[in-house]
Length: 363
Ligand SMILES: [Zn+2]
Ligand SMILES: [Zn+2]
Image 1 (spheres, rainbow, N blue to C red):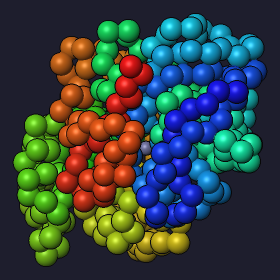
Image 2: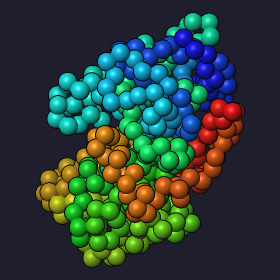
Image 3: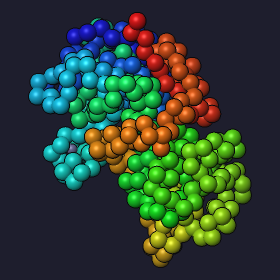
Image 4: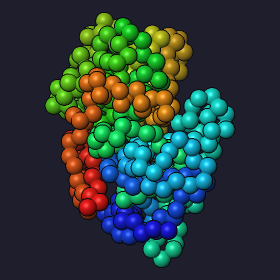
């Protein structure tokens, strides 16, 4: 057991409380990672708002990087002192999905109430998103971490653990974009900018960003968008089709807003597909026309965490970053201490931020 400072959610939507919690030592197959950085993702905010359910009290946070400071039995390939990215992708390795090379949809459910966290009084505490990274240290399964170069900044490395792999992976793995295809990315925020980078890396012809904010459309061009269309226009899909000459081959929805899903199929052409990346709250639904979609061979595909295999995909993303072909530094819009986490969340909720990163001072 060790005492760890964490930002704890006691009540959905109420400010997180900075307090000491208890973290048990790593057991079979687990590692302890002392965190240097954790970014704030919209999924953390949805959990904090109660939009995804889950038990309380809870510690959220899942887009992290740090150093291995504890190794449980039967851990292979990691040693004390390794620099690692820490993700929420906990994979059992033996279910149908894991066996099919799809660890992001592992079928073995993890119960965060039986995880390594307890309150200072010894009561159960929910390890949010199988990670609980709004804390100085985490204990996670070895399947959730990947080694990163020791000289890579942990603030930028933390982004690889969710926003970057989710966006780039949605373009490269889920949409399977081929050179010359046309792509629309709805939402030019933290994940959307990475979907745009992924489409560029995959060799797309036109990459059209769609967002409510004109400044974000301009910024999207730094990441590879060739065009921008304001979502506030009447029927923005018509402007997109005019730019492309037809509907898109792939539309990546990177915002968790149900009405956006209602209209997303309107942007795709014959044979095109919608990739569902952004996650609305659990009580929201969307509608579409099965007739049209069946008639012209369209599809809708869910993509969790960019369908990545982290030990395959994070190393190549690190390499592209080091070559200057994948932007990470430009994704960080603010650095905060753990004590400032409520301000950082409020700033993220305005929608203006790219990624806000909590940086730990182990002084
Ligand atoms: Zn996330
Ligand atoms: Zn599995």
